Image (cartoon, rainbow, N blue to C red; front, side):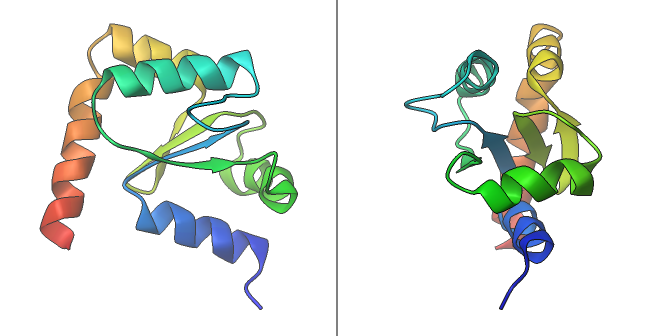
Length: 111
């Protein structure tokens, strides 16, 4: 049986843009997750998500694995970018949009 850390690594490696969040993009269960979704969606790229409320094992293990205590957590190309404040800050500085485009482009060339 696959353990939780292996599951997390697999999710991160298989999705160029991955948001660990509370709830879903259509129904976020916390204000920070809602903000993260809003700014990610504004960039126009598709992203995967994992609802940590439905995955208590991931909710417990991911902060240890990532060394980041809170949710949401945005991962791009296997790298932790950060949480809600960082997502908003990067969006406002026009750093997020090209990073997401690059991740999608890179993923398409690898498949």
